[in-house]
Image 1 (cartoon, helix red, strand yellow):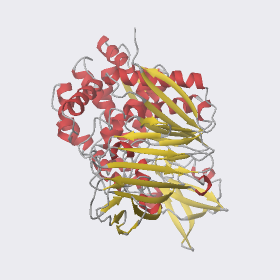
Image 2 (cartoon, rainbow, N blue to C red):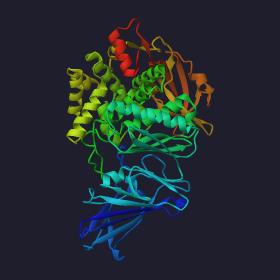
Image 3 (cartoon, rainbow, N blue to C red):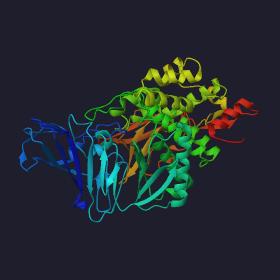
Image 4 (tube, rainbow, N blue to C red):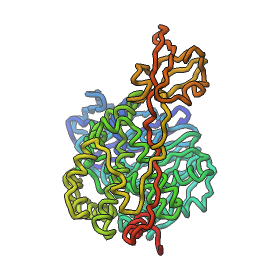
Length: 577
């Protein structure tokens, strides 16, 4: 008898936040079977210990007879099945964390992220199976990328697909549009100030522009799950779906609306970059431990390069607004002290212990592989376009790598292979670039690259001679407390610490009006700062240093060449210019 795998998901009391799960394996006939709960969610590189939310694990055979089971490590339950032809395990999962990486259930809806809900029987990860969802009687809809075979019953070819297909269960609004004959479903949970017709039209344009870059749609349907919340932001990519979270009234401003469209573009572009074109360590997944790669700056950073660019090329972001976004990203990187401490490849590798565990010193010691990766994507694109007189761009690299490593070789790529693809497009060695900017912390000559598009990056703060206090504070319960100190700043060099309570400056008591005392300081000024540290009063002398933060903006050079204009227009998707 061939093995069969069946899951059932129930939610009889949504207000308790418990899902009830059963998994039945038929035909195994083993002495024992280990059922394992993953410890992380692909796309979110942190061990989250999903087994911590499991309760009431038990097992039975096909006749309903109890089978002995025991937990053998933090996320594995061993069922002594005595070669039974059918084994069913039952357990509950507490789900009350509404993020794109976890699962959630309350009286208004249920959301399931597979790795935080479904255990898998070890040795049967490649087994096809079915999932039957039993919605609470107050819920009438299910949205998921899984293939439906009957009402609320779905099939999956292996565990990876089950784990990578989130479910939205409730009474969400459903909108649709079609691109290249492929239906796209948008499941909107929660109210918001969006206009459905306009939003669907613009999301369709984002999808069309993404497809134009990569050349094909490798799916037969796609599902957007959107959570409109009081406060929200972020997304997580999946094989043929994504979950997006946004603030429910975010659609009413230009920046909020285009920001949401950029999020749509980011997660949709992952359809190719990560979910199919991937670094070698990111699949097949090891769900039990970290999966290390130094290429998250490509997977996430290059995708960050494309998200705003896709919105711009779709005609949904003004030209100047896009240039300001790029300049702002460069400013962000260069104003981060950690950019001189941690390389972007190190940032990728250490995501598991650093990126999702930020503390008060993270800004001083780390750099975001999202932001810096996006900036490096800009530079790589400019280098390729300059070297080929606009004949090729980063678009060509992404298409060629997708065709080679996903479609032809069906495997992940290495660091050397990514660099080789860049070099092939540019027509020359990129050793110095990768040594200095990917594996090193050198500052690029930005104008050397952006000159290819007739642009000059100008630091609006270059003539600034003011000083900088260098500490962030919060005012709560009548106390002003330092929450961050920037490496190399006045406060940092003077020895002020996070958690210090600032009582007075130069003899004057301060509260939430601290800017009155530090906002206009000049280099060379001296401040006497009275603080309480661990209940002990002390005065810390602070010598004010020059504010070295940059504020970049792009300017177009006078009399650009036809080659520069051609590169500029091709980059930004300006047609007929």
